Image (cartoon, rainbow, N blue to C red):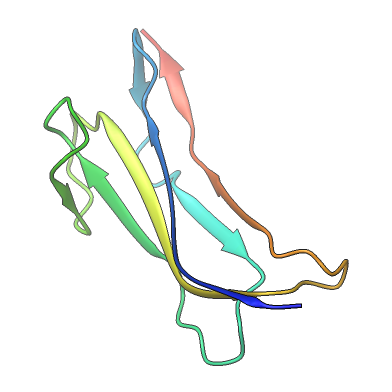
Length: 88
């Protein structure tokens, strides 16, 4: 068993879709002292400049940062990120 620190999951919002406001979430096997995952959004088209403030529109990339994950009940360290889009 072990622990993973500073785990980042990121994804690009697919072309010809629009990110659904408020749909980003992250879940994982948080260690006992871990804080909630940090949700971040980019509107720059390249996913290099992220903000924790969700913009009203124009999200091109999303990411979730977990400060500390530990083994879950299955013995594996797991983390997931989900978000929704609408097709343009």
